[in-house]
Image (cartoon, rainbow, N blue to C red; front, top):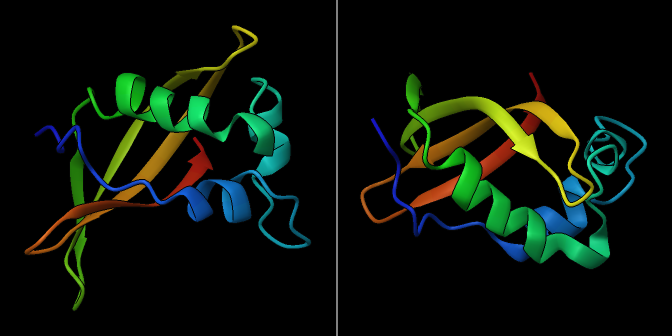
Length: 104
């Protein structure tokens, strides 16, 4: 199953969570290996749409908020390095949105 290409990817999810250095569960250093930074967050959003949302999504768990899906694939960054990533998405009655991204 493919998730919607217009799935919601909130800017703050990218700039204040995935691309921001955090003391716990930091993902920014992993994404930096492919050239992603807070200043080029739009590139990460575009790459998620073009490289990850085009892959099959696998249902994982049903929660009170909606059905969760994971998509595992390679993300080729601005510096042409590839990262193996697992993204988690949630589908509700009204929309589909990115929950998180992890090294796969």
